[in-house]
Length: 127
Image (cartoon, rainbow, N blue to C red; front, side):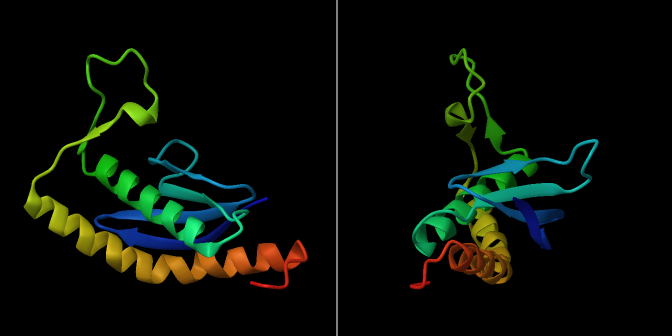
């Protein structure tokens, strides 16, 4: 199950916000198959705070990548995303916070609705 729940602007880019089973998340830059950036969030987590945190993490990360603020240090042999460095000053940090906050206000209700629907289908009555 992967489902698009929203298409939203974040900064100067357009993002498809998708949900899937499981936990965690990932972000994608535009490619041949999809002209938009994409954020995918797992809605299988048992509490919505975890899902919110994942959405926030992925939104910030893909925003920084799209703004060319993400770097892989030369001293790392791996291209694993855990090795990325994000470089920006306080002024850019303020801009990112403002842009991501506006995105989260609109994206979170869409993702949370999908989280509730997923857990109701799984028979979890306490959502």
